[in-house]
Length: 300
Image (cartoon, rainbow, N blue to C red; front, side, top):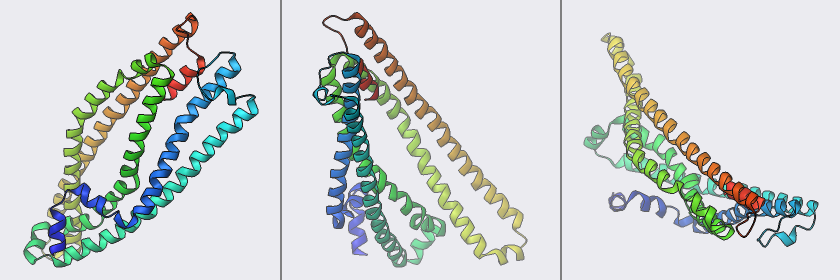
């Protein structure tokens, strides 16, 4: 019991992160693989840009141009980038999946030990459904933190930093034009975040109630039939089901706003890049732009 009291004093993220300590070596290996994946992702548009400019007769300003002496070599080099990126991705996914499942195995043991140590009053306070949800659905949801959120956050931070550096290096004017989308995306994300978070909590609460309802009613089905309470219990379930339906439909509605909005912003920025880039390609002169550089920008 002292162990769990100490755990409760720390933030949730720190508690989750602390469970990765026994697997620090594997997590470091995954982090290195993520960096290698990022490097491959960053170089691919640059390599394609060099190929395009090399064989359209323009003079690009990047270090890969000299390597593109002929088309077969360029194609094999690009294919090698794709293959290495895929190999690193598969290795990283398999490693982090093994780590996350090992952590979840230990977490389920801790949750079950915790439930066994609860007093009768605490068991009545939390209810069967909430405890079942905590030991099954919630533990499985935490799997996303280890296998998806944690490493993806690490990957995305470095990937975004690399993209910014690449874009500023290739053409700072186009880079600044691309960055116009950042305030719009930030405003949209932060304005909708609180609503999504509250609705997610509501869905988890109703899920716990539904699990508890099924557990208690299936266990007490003889008593329900003895008192002819089937219709009453059916009405209670319909109300819980209606609440869950309402919560999930709200989540779907919020997603239908957020994701298409991001796609629209992304498309508008690409359209701006193409328009500005085309004018500079057609105009020539000191501010001329290579076709390959414009292609790389639309990818980044």
